[in-house]
Length: 193
Image (cartoon, rainbow, N blue to C red; front, side):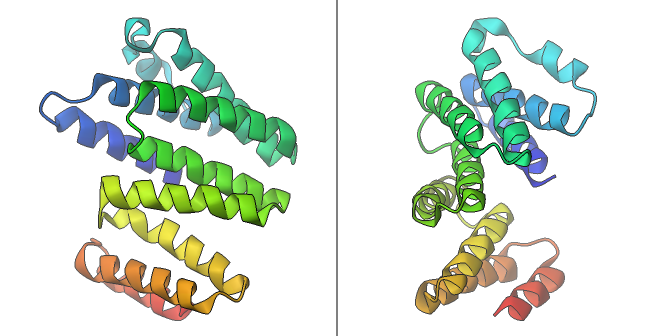
């Protein structure tokens, strides 16, 4: 559900931007279709809105790779999942500006898979890059709360309390200033501290 909401937000924000980045919108639509397929939701209208002339066959490759990454991750087939995530990231980086939220989302997904695989050092590298891109592209958007909290929990689990506290504090600051459901988010974050 978080991936679906993130793709919808990216599509909405980029579509409204003057001279919007068509590649970014189309790539986010491609990602949304993949997420909806994984949730067994109807994607016919979204698929029809994608134009092959914008992204060409790379969009299809990214669709299939993302779908494969999610399914193989769920099945615990981490090597296949990692290869598929790498393919998605390669296409995204070729077609999009490096500072796009969709790249942060893919990096976060890769980090989560690596964490499940037990490769904590590599997962941390991908997650740090995802948070960095998220901060630069989304700023203090409420969508940054969850990644910051996940990172803070991971740092706490590793005994890195200063980094954990810093991320929790950043998430709390965003919740206080930006979150539409401030009270609930603040309470959840305070419980984590």
